[in-house]
Picture 1 (tube, one colour):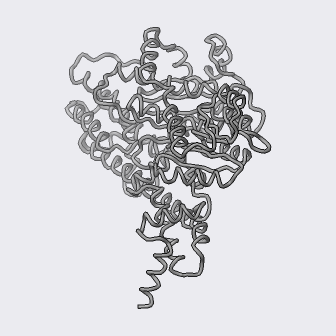
Picture 2 (picture 1 turned 120 degrees about the horizontal axis):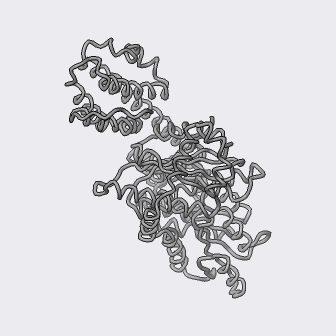
Picture 3 (picture 1 turned 30 degrees about the vertical axis):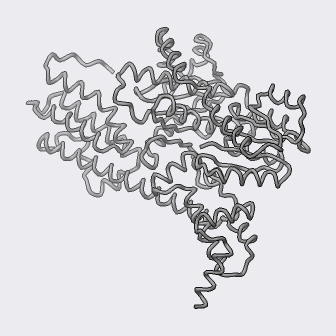
Length: 554
């Protein structure tokens, strides 16, 4: 999705440009109107804007001052200047400040479209796949700072000594983070690896994802990233300067949340990988980082839709075993390493993958002769720990306990045979998957009802994807994909159908003039309404009204 903000103090110019881009009919382009620099700043404070088409000379704050404010909030935003003055000095200054292009207001519509399309094409050209992968290869040759990675993981898992010594460690390893400042956490996950990628390739791709993220985030923040659980990443983020007000903290949060969208798109375009993200709502003290990390993991595991390419915001609220030379033992130990991925399958609702790994592990263990075999006990209680973790995490003790005796989980001896224990585990897993599926569908149904009710009640108001995202609490880019995934219908198509249905009713009632009906269903100009209605019905609004009247009169 590309978000275009059109800024001009002359309303007819803004309205005609909105109409121009509406005629293009590009579903990936959403346009926003601002009739002053102040309104533009309001939009920039609400959502990530990709391209700004702005007048240069405006009363109050002019276009160049506005551009400086844009760069502060969204450094990657492209600005196209629109002016009625052939003022070379002004244009030069705008280009020095990073403007992409400039146009005179007398330019043809095709030239305006060309300039905006050019800006859209350049949005992700700064992130080149070949260069990123080459950079990742160089990093691998020099080797990752494994100590830092492990140390950050120890801190995030709540190790008190690691947390206490963070100031010393940050100074020693030149970590670009402040040990006494608040920190913001974001976690990411590769949803599906391409089949042709081996272990080394996957590691390379993780480094490339890190580089993409840091390239976007480094424009306005300091960040450190770590890799955990083979396919997951985490970012510790702080502002370049200390935050001194709630407005500054809100700006950091908006920047990070909006930038996640760009990172996800770049990973898909250049690495061909789907990546999901869960982010804290804002910064918090270091001592709360383990708690935040736990909450983000839970949030990412309970995403709606297919559980892929998510963008979620959290809003508040051993000793090494002795080696066994036996082939069967080695196979079991190898399978025990898969309990981690099994947990991920359970978390993501991947039922078939979970039961495939489960059956292999239980099948290998079934041939063990001694009921008291320590390895068999290890397999059993590894699975007990897995199921208990999710029963606790999802709060399902009472619901599942109503149909299954959960007391058996902690008593291996309560099962008459290994096969009986396997059936018991299968029953628990089936209940967990069923409950997750029911919970997901219930939340999806509630979400769709909420969206549709809001649209139907606000046809004359703000129905931008940004506003709808604010109402339901989802990133607008992710929301459009989620809505399509759940309903098999695009959100913009639903809005258009709702507007058409309301327009037909108002025309049939014959109490309002067409101009008022146009405004009542959310069109900025009567011309846009006529074009929309004619395309949908092959009739003009007046023709529709007259045909309905003829039918009523027999």
